[in-house]
Image (cartoon, rainbow, N blue to C red; front, side):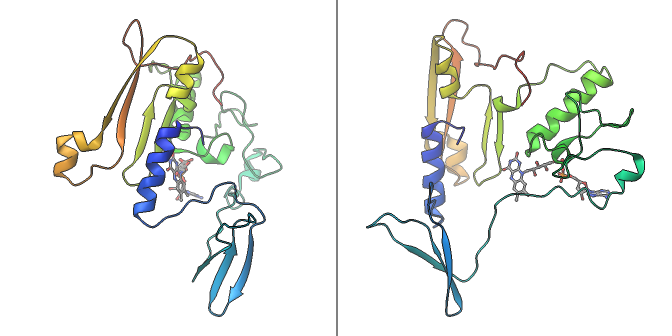
Amino acid sequence: MREDPDVCTAIEEIFAKEQITIRARAECVRFEQRGHDIAAGVNCTPGEPELVVGSHLLLAVGRRPNTDDLGIEKAGIKLDPHGYIEVDDQLRTSVPGIWALGDCNGKGAFTHTAYNDFEIVAQKSAGWPLTPPQRPDCLLRLFIDPPLGRVGMSETQARATNRSIRIGNRPMTRVKRAVEKGEAQGFMKVIVDGQSNEISRCDRSRSRR
Ligand SMILES: Cc1cc2nc3c(=O)[nH]c(=O)nc-3n(C[C@H](O)[C@H](O)[C@H](O)COP(=O)(O)OP(=O)(O)OC[C@H]3O[C@@H](n4cnc5c(N)ncnc54)[C@H](O)[C@@H]3O)c2cc1C
């Protein structure tokens, strides 16, 4: 939902080719047994298909941190009420010399936020001379097929700055290697500063999450 509308549309089209249908903003979701199948009601709007029927139902409605079997209470490390390890903005736990990185601290739930945690600890606590980390909302790696990746601002973010920008767009059908490999779905988009022609980067001074 944070990506540009053209990106969302492209992904929806890719899913559609795999017979994956997205029903966003579904209201009054409900389930009922239909013989050996299960039916999910996904919309209350008259005229829309009322039920999706299938053999199985997977509910992906949140995650619980897997911190309860670590025995970290023996080290005196504090958890928050949801079971995430409590950290400050340098990812220090309540015990000096112990940091918590990645999903377990509840501050992000992505590969790139976990990596950004490493960058924060490496720079701020260990003093490693790394290049300044990108803000995680300026990075995206979505492990669909083909994968979706973004570095720097989305078009929406760049337009909101009111700076002049230039946008280039190339469908993968125009990329010969993609065509050769039979992976020509989707597109590439580049957004650069109107004056410098540099990729529109996020302002790193803003907070991490
Ligand atoms: C289905 C699914 C899809 C996802 N899709 C995306 C996506 O498209 N894009 C994206 O950016 N992120 C995605 N994520 C999230 C991403 O995988 C996580 O945010 C990221 O892996 C977190 O990194 P981490 O190092 O904190 O934890 P993990 O990668 O989970 O690593 C933790 C490691 O610790 C090990 N471990 C656990 N307990 C112990 C123990 N007691 N002793 C020793 N080792 C232990 C585990 O085996 C594991 O190897 C997805 C996650 C899931 C589950």
